[in-house]
Amino acid sequence: MRGAALILASLALSLATAARAEPPTLPLGADLERFEYPYPVRWFATGAQGGKVRMAYLDVAPTGPANGRTAVLLHGKNFCAATWQSTIAALAGAGWRVIAPDQVGFCKSSKPADFQYSFHALANLTGRLLDEAGVERFALIGHSTGGMLAIRQALLAPERIEQMVLVNPLGLNDTLAEGVRYTPLDDLRAEEAKTDAASIRAYQRRVYYDGQWRPEYDRWVDMLAGQYAGPDGDRVREAQARTSDMIQTQPTVHELARLAVPVTLLIGQKDATAFRAGSAPQALRSRVRAVPAAADDAARAIPGARIVRFADLGHSPQVEDPARFEATLIEALAGPI
Image (tube, rainbow, N blue to C red; front, side, top):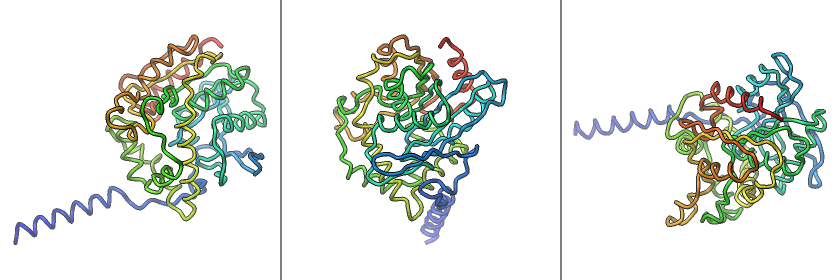
């Protein structure tokens, strides 16, 4: 009996510890109304697809001697403009004006029902935002899904882009062609219904950070999970499902040779991201390349591209080692334009 009691006590302690490790998620609103950004939020309101949308964005002036240039930062699917906090501060300190938008469907920006998400549509809206902000030419930095958007932006309006930096971008390989099964929107919705802080953290630890975790990453998990947690979380789930469909069906790899702007790839080599590779048949999964392998081929396909590898970093080097990432980024942007 005493042994059984000890086992039960140990189990109760384990359950209590697990409960403390994953506290209830604070609802932050579908548009992150209750999540504070590190800089004042501005708004770009416009029409799109027969309705009204507005995009939140950060517009940060240089804090060091101004160099007269603007850097535009594009976030990934599991990120927001706020995630660029340290990068914004570093670029502003180096003399840059920095603009970081939240794309429609993400974070503080609108998530309209029945919106047809495409990288063309998001690039068009971003270009119009920059028009309103008075930005003609700029350096473009895109991370993860934001790298796919940056490539589309560069293909649509190369005359506006001085240079482009791609940080662990998706879309450099066609995962459907490599064996990933197409996932219908209804199935993507069903997956989103299961998303919470624990699933976000587990995915990021395994795929983004090579099995490691630091307390400072929790802020960004709480930000994402907080969108799902409230009564309007279904708007977020729908937008996330639709943008997943956009990513799986609109790879940029087939157009890389058409890029006509200077390109630098900054690639964390520990990144295990291979979009939706888990849905591929077991026999084909080894064919689905993760970002680092796809980036090696992309660097050869993009005219004049150069690649900088972070051997010990993963999918989000700007989060994992901000100081090293920022020094490398600023050096890359100091190159010829």
